[in-house]
Image 1 (cartoon, rainbow, N blue to C red):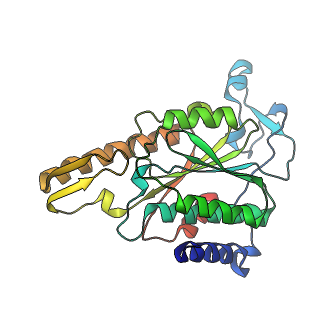
Image 2: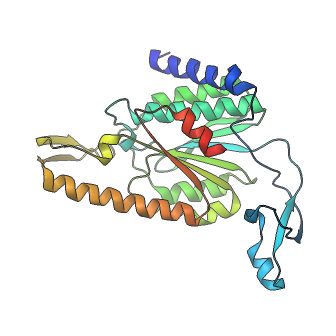
Image 3: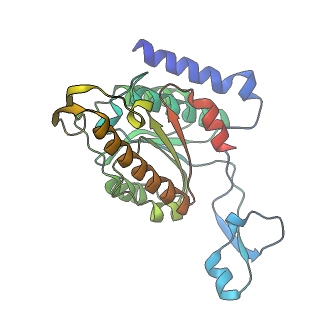
Length: 277
């Protein structure tokens, strides 16, 4: 096993099962998903439970009531296109592995079954439904060693296949850098499942500096670029990034999707804890 991967597994397992986190509330939280009935809204209840369509019909706020469910259905979906084969501090693929490992061990600790997929042009099963430590280790190894070069991310195919393959209402963690999101549409998937987005980036991607004449290779398409990275080029690039992220954040908020952004020089656990609480 690769030394870096082994460190990730040992580190994340220790973090989740340590005294600091292990004896406190779990990283993963949720309620039952089996619908029971509708009832009139009472002051103090979570407004997220309001069924706005029914409320509009009856001209009174109604909330959905669900059967209690001890186990959560967790799906961990790292998006491994060629763009994650990059990093100034460490590769984004390594950060994604660590974030997924934290989520996997949180499932094991809480006793919730999790399934993992690898997504880019389509989705493929990574590990089948399990509550075992072995499944987390297998998932980590597959994500860490996955050949991302030449892989293009197709968000439309990803969301369509997740919708078809995940039938029971679940919590879906999407973990990736979320660039080139023109065909990203999570509205339908978000109505069926609870989605949580974990955006993994390298700070150099958002704030690059002048490099002069360069020869670059796009790890997604293998296309080469010969040119000059100067102030003008950087200005246009930063504008594109701002527009991409503005569209992304607006879409996630409109879909009611919680999200966080983690950089390659940061520890993922503190941000994941804040996100889940």
